[in-house]
Length: 613
Image 1 (spheres, rainbow, N blue to C red):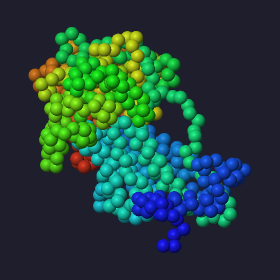
Image 2: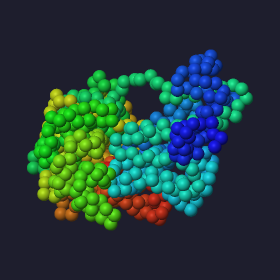
Image 3: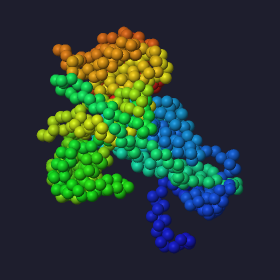
Image 4: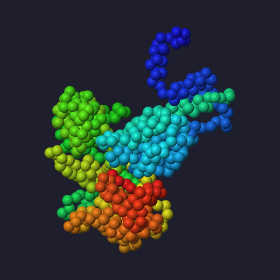
């Protein structure tokens, strides 16, 4: 009743205050304290504070203690690691003391000493933690995990909403830290493939909370003031990246498979001249493809749309003709549960609502598998939904990542990739991989392709050039090992190398056969074993070759060899891992538990690295 505020202000405050977190309230109190010490535009330490800058009381400059922040990342392909590095750099620029580390390098016993924790983690496969997050995940969910009442934390989760267990690892970390007594600084954010904007929003929310904590600590002051800058403009450097791809010229587009093969594998050579893009062996090339024009036209006809209608294609409000937008800007070959939920709001179809209702989870899972947008509009009679409304619920066209198959030292200003064409029948229609068929059927030398370099710090050659290297890569999984060997040839590495490669038929499917033969001849490749599964009565795969050479394989491990695995995760990578366990049990006399611990230690030492998909 004695409030100094008018009725409108009271209503605004009553609406705002219940929505604030404790950290936000702390920040707000620090900000208001600043106005009691001096208004915006005040000169402090010889500098004029402009709009957006608050003068905050703090002790003398030399006595200020920066707030400490620990940033942990779990990353399989490098996205989480790249984001964590960027966030850490920005925090340091704002005066925080930051410790950045991979979950595999973090000592779990230190967790109880941390005050501010940020976790950036992806979900791998069917809801699994990335390789470098596995041990920390197990510790945190085990009985030895400590109580964390003094911990403030926030989680950024990366994933793919087309998978059933979308962002599961991040959700698990978020839930477990709360169970252990931690308090969220900022709500968890779950990112789909297009993660830039939600990740930036999460960081701003975290930064607001951290600023409040740091400013209040600094606000117990004795006279002097500090400047805290909000959203200070940074010098912009134009670089090509995932959000600003380079339009590169295609130099070569060759089918590597011989006549009679039931497979088609394209070898693309692409010019990077003038881009400034650089890569290392183990990195990937991101390619933005186009949807098949026939599918686009079928979708437009089925919905009764005008192909020349102008639609908005992004949050910036950029516009494009509908046909062009559906070809280049939006994903139309993958269905996700969130997209179906939004489609149900645009339609009056009861069948779609029933599919999404509780109790139909398995039916929904089965429907999402292998179907696309054309199936959705036909199965649930969505014709009549305006094009502008419909495209607003679609995911942006995601880039496809391909392991780089070249060395920039051997091929300056070029990058090579290996792409297997995917075609199959499902639900009464022919289906195909968006990028692989685009490259195989509609991409010619001289055309340009939007590309960027995706750095993968978790799949790198050993720094010691004398270290033995074992490479296991059937099919297109052999691509990065072509890069590895080309690089080692250029730098004169002397360590032994062993390649295990497999495919269906020796005569038609031996990818890069001449390259391997040349490297065997000049000693860059020490040893090679092959497995062509359809050339023998009983199918033989790379894991079988490993077991046949188990004694030699174990000897290489004892000599400190680094093991690299690239290719299919669901089958090959699992079978290779099982073969490694068997070799350690058989040749090293280890129990299964000891063998698993041995491989876990190899992973932590980066002696066992996987690039699986």
